Length: 106
Image (cartoon, helix red, strand yellow):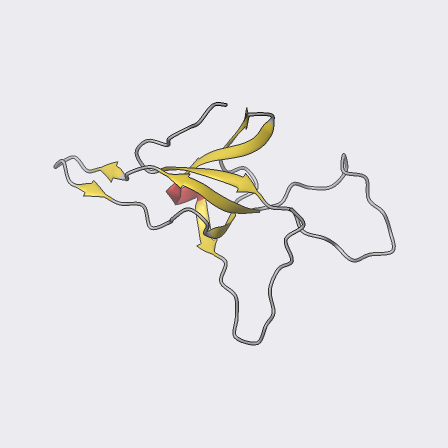
């Protein structure tokens, strides 16, 4: 089994897929890939020109949203992942107090 440890401000993400409730069945080959993921690992942060390390604001387990063209897809241990910079992440998904949330299909 291969393990990966991100460097600098890189993050390692598992793409999340969500159940869509619909009468129409859309083949996987036509569906767009999810823009949501779960952070698996984070690097130690980037280093400024003055040598100061700026830590990554994300942590393993965070559910995130990112852009359509964010990251690089890699296959490790027969599973698909994304490696991207912290700056490619638009935000962290948080559950709201009224019970609304995204249902994870994984």
